[in-house]
Image 1 (cartoon, rainbow, N blue to C red):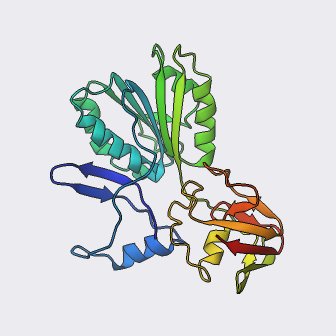
Image 2 (image 1 turned 30 degrees about the horizontal axis):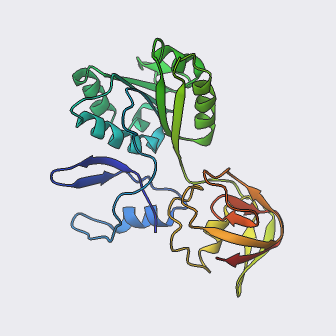
Length: 277
């Protein structure tokens, strides 16, 4: 099972749209791209999660990196449907090249139509004729678009590096009412270390490469029924660490209790003995 962010939605009739990026080692994304066609039927759960717009926020900053635009686009759909839209919404969209700006023309159109919406795409490796922001999103640009605001709510979905930098910048904004930060992470990606370790999980024994998330290595021998986020948020891949040492590839949103690990966020640093919960 995998969870993907809603990219677009409408209420009447209910219709949902997803944007799923094919990952080189993505079992589900590759299967979907290769097998699902118009008319295919899939079993899905109803939308859920904590990364949603909170009510009563009038000054909003949306920060996206690449395909991280998907949940923020759905938020914009929701705001467009509001009878009383917010005072100001700014979307900062970071990508490397122009073709990586998903829904760019749609967002430009919304900027023209919606008096409360400001769209600021930023390319780190733009073509010579690019007229928008160049370089990387930083504290100065965040401060510029929020100048004069009484407070701000920041929603971001991007790489760990960008979200860490922008969170720090947001906390330093000189806004009287402060800044509230919400974020959704991508799944953990990491390079293998070249060192292999033995891992036992119940009656199963496998060899795993250090530096790689344990979840991907253990799915061949254990069914993680509720592990959907793959980013340290849902807690569905919790395991008990009986012996050995792990490296945390990412600090989870909800840290597990002592003696437990999240397989999507950890890699093996030694031989491990694990137990399912």
